[in-house]
Structure formats: C-alpha cells, structure tokens
Image (cartoon, rainbow, N blue to C red):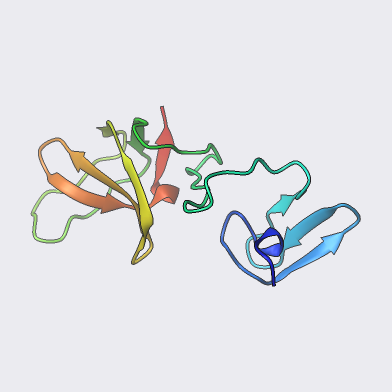
Amino acid sequence: MSNEYKCPKCNSINTYQDMNLWICAECFHEWDPSEMVENDESQAVILDANGNILQNGDSVAVIKDLKVKGSSSGIKAGTKVKNISLIESHNGHNISCKVDGIGAMYLKSELVKKI
C-alpha cells in the first residue's frame, strides 16, 4: 500500500475513502491527498496537541503536568521548552529537547503546544 493512503496523523493503514477525502478509522482524521504538501521524504509530519505542524527549532509549552523518571520533581503544565529537535519515534516520543532544571529528555508531541 502506498504512503498516500496511510493516515498522516497516526500513520495507520486502516483508512477508507469517502468521496475525495480519506478518513482514518482509528483516529478519525480526514485529509485530501491532493492538498497535502509534500514534505521531506525522510521525515513525517509531526503535529502538536492543537494540530499545528512542528518543526526543528520551534518553541513549545507543555500542556499537562508530567512525571520524570529518576526525579522527585516533574515538569509542570505551562513549562516552555525552546529549540526542540524532531526525531524518529522513540517509544512514542518524537521530540528531543532540553528542559530548564531537568535536562535533556524526550517528549511526546501530543503533550505540547506550539508557542
């Protein structure tokens, strides 16, 4: 199956066509393949919690409190993270960054919003 029929949001192959739109049966994302912008073939589109496209070097804010393994403190909602790097999915985490006071870590894109 070609990539144009995979869901661009969750990368599922469980999709179907309804008129000129394709619909993902798992996350219910709808898209028109003719309107999709071709991105770099080596990197998939990564979206934040609000559906905005994230790029390397963007600044994001965490939208909920996160626990950090090996630390008694965590990351509070609203914490700003600058200069993110997008990576291939690493256990569901697709953002590599440095958080002030915590250090280098991976985050999930659905837990941040672009600022």
